[in-house]
Image 1 (cartoon, rainbow, N blue to C red):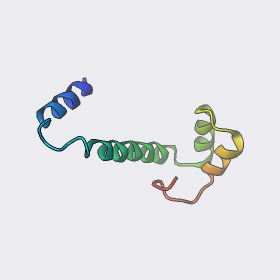
Image 2 (cartoon, rainbow, N blue to C red; image 1 turned 135 degrees about the vertical axis):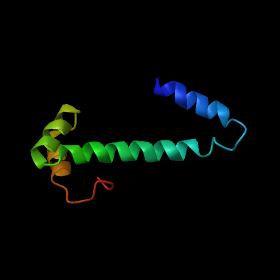
Image 3 (cartoon, rainbow, N blue to C red; image 1 turned 90 degrees about the horizontal axis):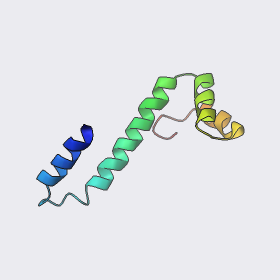
Image 4 (tube, rainbow, N blue to C red; image 1 turned 180 degrees about the vertical axis):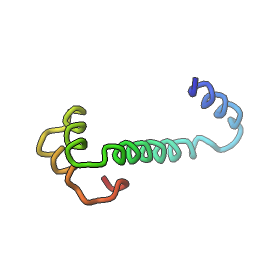
Length: 74
């Protein structure tokens, strides 16, 4: 269903210079979704376990789970 809205929105603004803007919006959207998911995991062990489930090596998952960097930089 959301795909219909996006396709309709792109077709509506087809005459505008939107092709240069869409990749930037897509990058921002993906980055924001990753930050929201990272915030939902909250603590080290859920982060570690979920990163392992996603296929990241244990030593890297432990490193990422214990980072003090902000959501945006992780």
